[in-house]
Image 1 (cartoon, rainbow, N blue to C red):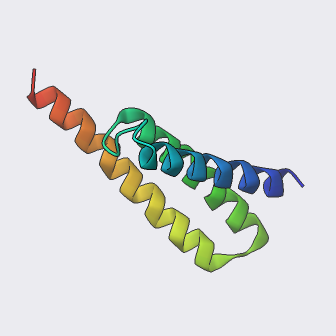
Image 2: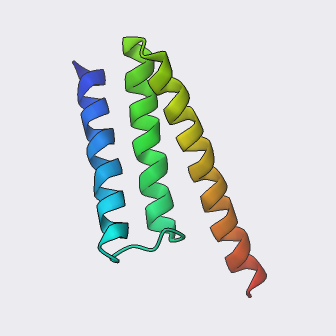
Image 3: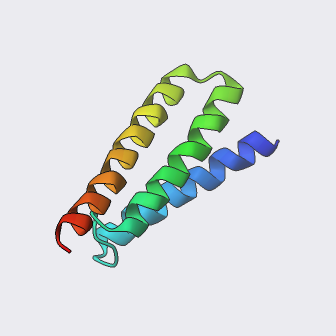
Amino acid sequence: MIFTLLGWVGAFILIFAFFQVTRGKLSPSSNMYQYLNILASLFLLVSSYKIGAWFAVTLNGFWLAVSLYGIINVYLKKKNNK
């Protein structure tokens, strides 16, 4: 039950973040967008793992990796601009 809820929360966060970018309320390179993606992909990864949905584990593992790459790039760009 808890892992199903975790999956639903992760899906909601992911859709919310994408919707905010689409509306122009968040920038795809913003910290908030990257953090939302990291949180969503972690929740979905754990949920998918617990139910044995290996394609979703793979997808969310890559989503997490890309999101971490994004947040590192945001940090490095800000650091280099100082």
